[in-house]
Structures are given as structure tokens and as C-alpha cells.
Image (tube, rainbow, N blue to C red):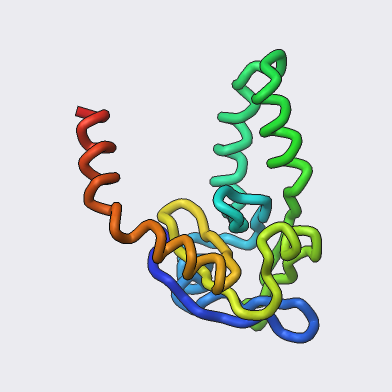
Length: 147
């Protein structure tokens, strides 16, 4: 549902405009509520309400008696915040999440199928430049594991 890379900036009030392409999908699927939380690789994950409930269900099924499960769930869910877009298509990202992701002003909004990732532009640049050369190797490894 969400695809592509989009450069944006956070305004002086801490709001981020969601790309129009994504807002069109929100309208098409009548999506109004989102959940944002700490992601992996120093980015933020933004989920639609339905996708969030699906993710939550998966994580709840993991045994809380396992130390790593407890740790992950605490960090993941304690960072979560319910948000909505305003009429101009902006969201307000909580300060603690911006701090986690190193976001100051310039951001990259990345569509990753069932979620949106929000990155500091600098952090995304480092991640992308450090990863793009290994795309073929990663694809080969993943496809071999599945087959």
C-alpha cells in the first residue's frame, strides 16, 4: 500500500506533512488513526490502526517468560503513540520519538508496503549508502532461505 521515498521537513511546531500519495491511500481505505513507535535501524514505524492491531497480536503471542520478548515488547510498545493527521495532512511526532530517531528538521518518509518509516535524512543516507551495494546478495540469500 505504501511505496517510495519522499523528502520532507518538520515545521517549527514539530509537524510533518505526510506525502500526498500516502494521504490518497488513507482516503481510499478510510484510514484515520495511526500508531507511531520506535522502529528498527534508528527509524520510526508508522502503522495504520488495522496493521498496528495485527502487529500487536503477533507480539502478544510471544511468551512473556522469555527475557528478550519482554525487553522488545517494553521498548516497542512503551514508545507507541496514537496519532491522527490534521486537515492539512500533518502529524505531530512526539519529541521522545524524534530524539530516538535523531530527527531534527529534514526527514525521509519511506513506504515499506504495510508501514511507513520516518528517518532523519542523514541517518537514511548513511543506511542506504551502506546497504545498496548488498541488495543482490541479500535478495539471493532471502530467496534461497525461502526455497
